[in-house]
Image 1 (spheres, one colour):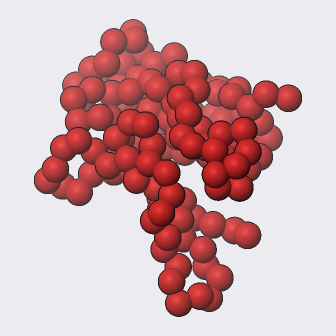
Image 2 (spheres, one colour):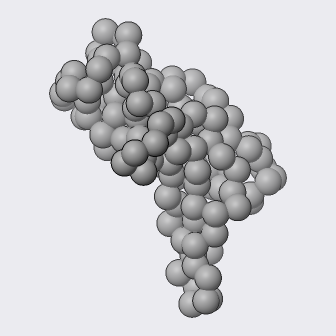
Length: 141
């Protein structure tokens, strides 16, 4: 099954940011968008995600006040089962960041660019991370 995962965000008016996950399955069924999935632990906007061997990792973002370095993981290939049957906090990036990019290769997620703070403490909108890249190795062998 191939799916598109839509995570969190902002409705343009209400805080805190959303913790929802929706899954779009382009299988030809009448209802494609399913929203009965578990909510993430932290409401986020501007976060990015990577799919690592059946597990969905979401990283960073902005919570409405500060940039985030925190990450959450969920076993999306078998909802309600697997190593992470609900969203679980896992590690953190070295720098806070939002509106960044990510790519995954095998068991690693590569995170790059965005806005945030290299020095660690969360910053307001407009701070810059620039050309800093990180590798998130969160999947154990």
